[in-house]
Length: 420
Image (cartoon, rainbow, N blue to C red; front, top):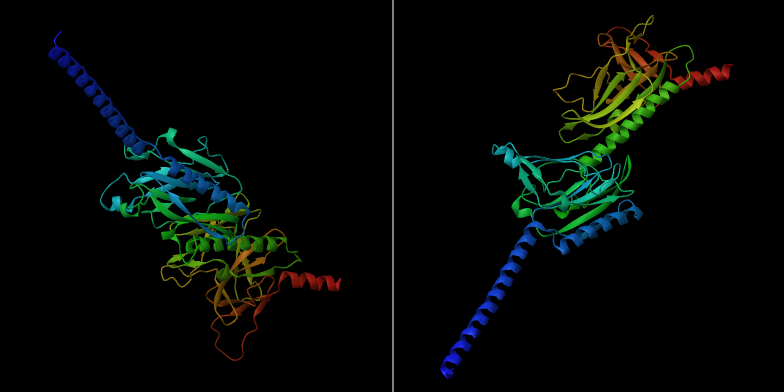
């Protein structure tokens, strides 16, 4: 073999080896690029997953912190991921994309049931990281294998509306880095998250919100505080009625006094709160409601309630009516669109609306109202066991007729004990 032929064959082998090596390098680069793309599209980075677990641990730490504590943490989120905190009651979280609805879309409702069996447990709060979100037949879905959930012991979340979502109606909280939930410019990889402990009528809760949702330095919305106040007021009303039931009956109807409805049941901007009284199966159900037909709290009492019509008539000043199936008492009596409340009475000269109750006999209590033709009801104070005065309405003539007085139950009982 000549030297020329030898070198030619050697160069050919070298070229083949080089091309093979280049092919391997290119293949590796393509594989790395594909894996990188797949990782970004379908997997949460370890950093974002670690950030989620850090948030979970931060929330868990609040079981040992005092009410009023507010702390911050930084959260990292990949694209098309959403973190949802579910409350203990297992209710779903619902989302409504107002912008899509306004544009005529009909596929903007998303409901997320608490994923019990995928990390969440019944009757426990839970926090979940949703990944790989996609739409199927107009519904927002996720791949169950990519779902990460952590149950939370001794933690409860409130129901908090959040402005960073188009619309949120549910329990717990939502932090989104998905255009399915939030406007594009609000989807950030890094965001500051606030965690706050708050004491409401049902005990201690932990609220979680983003910086953009912080109002007056608090994660707790004014709406939630009003609802908490109303739920607490409903409990006080139930206690008031139960105390009336337990009053000793001394042979004649007596006054249980007036409940300070105005102070205990709130009003929120244009929303008026109402208490619904329901007589069902010899039980009284009290429901706190806000428009439109949203029940915020409910309490059941082992009694039924009747109406008692009071009139300025010395022979028969109290007329007991049959128990009615249901009726409302509204918080805002100045609302021109509401029929004037027949159950509203006033005390003193302040003209503050109240509702009053009497014990009619051993087994019956009444909410009272006046015969509007000739009667005005006045109570001495907005406290239990105050007398109720039945006065003549619009009297014109010499002298002022003496009001008919319904003595408070405790005063009658005390007097009877002293005389016995």
